[in-house]
Amino acid sequence: MTDLPIKKIIHIDMDAFYASVEQMDNPELRNKPVAVGGGSERGVVAAASYEARKFGVKSAMSGIIAKRLCPDLIFVKPRFERYKELSYRIREIFFEYTDLVEPLSLDEAYLDVTENKKNISSATRLAKEIRIRILNEVGLKASAGISINKFTAKIASDINKPNGQKTILPEDVIPFLEELPIEKFFGIGKVTAKKMIGLGIYNGKDLKNQTLDFLTRNFGKAGSHFYEIVRGIQYSEVKPNRIRKSIAAERTFSNNLRNLKEIKVKLNSISEELERRIERNNVKGKTITLKIKYDDFSIQTRSKTVFDWLAKKTEIDKIIDELLTQKEINRPVRLLGISLSSLYTEEKFPDIAVQLKIDFNKKIE
Ligand SMILES: [Mg+2]
Image 1 (cartoon, rainbow, N blue to C red):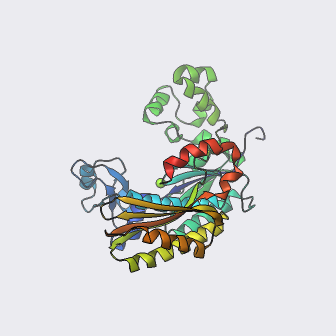
Image 2: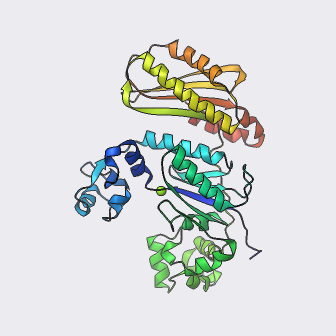
Image 3: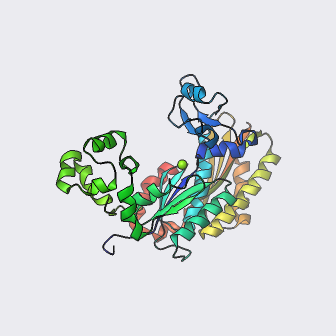
């Protein structure tokens, strides 16, 4: 076993993410079969609550079929900005443990915790702690898979879903993969699985019995990938595709804000939240951006960059006051956000500065 490349990888997967967010935000949807999306005539379900899944409702299913399977199904319009907001909050938690975070989508990420900021050696314990924090701080349930590489961790996170986790220890990886049905291998889709079965390959053990030559002949380049993964070998690193460029807090309001006083009260609590995140992440920055989204979905951003490093709420509030009075707000407001950018942390990564600049212009508004 010692010849295997061993890392401590956690794959976190939020449980029925979009549907769970809707059930969290709208108490009347709790414990009910909910489908996000799929409500319009030719709509497709983007996510289904566990109550709906019992009836066989799945994501990517047409709304019409879903309704046929589950006549009481409640269709909800997706609110991607809200999902994004929560996803970023969840990522902030990940960043407290490691900078090696690779998001796969809004609701999934790999974390390399081989070395971590808490100096906790048990990845199982870390995964548990992270899941508890997501539940306490964001209000949502997550599942986790823990293993020696991304591939195995990803398969593991599905095993005790929802609201569970599974660790596959280094010594268990090989037997686990040998028993795994071929269609459960991550990266083996329906078509490949069918082809495998046609070749008499039903599980990991069958796959392992094939020569590299045989697999390459039948599956091309992927053949060598299959040859390695079934032996517990995967060199793919956790690639943090988002180096932190800013730290932000924002809120979407269920009732639009209509006067300056209300706006100020909300901004005060947002800057409080921002200060907490700044402290936790131990960063400082020079640019404050106020983001305002109006009821017509138009977005306005107002920024100010100062000479001194900013990290405290009092300093941030002063700039927010200035930005707020810069121009009149003459429409109802549905979202407010404050972000701190031009972070000090950027200077710690000079080697990626170029790449950072490109992303920078794209991501920061
Ligand atoms: Mg998920």
